[in-house]
Length: 103
Image 1 (cartoon, helix red, strand yellow):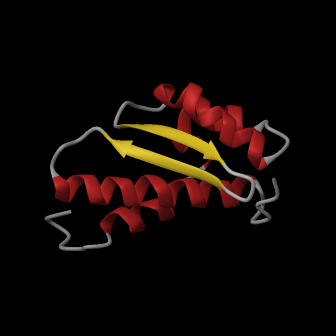
Image 2 (cartoon, rainbow, N blue to C red):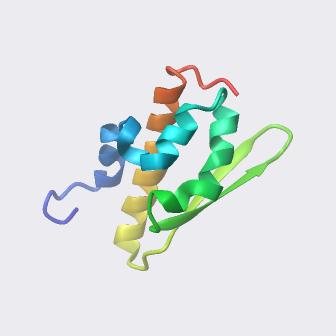
């Protein structure tokens, strides 16, 4: 981040997400029949990918809320990692749904 002098570094990293980026979790979610089913797999299996943060998912009648809490303490690192994580979820979700996003 410091070397590239890019305040959007975390968001730009998400452009490089590919099917194998999420290791076993990626393959588990690719075999789900809906995006909703894939989302349900994130929390129990995310430790297969790494331990940089913890996900929570909650539901209301109208929305599904996905949250990722970074385990790092440096605020400049946290903001970039949260941006990267959430944007990566979006990129990967579009990939596995062919951009459809149906639940």
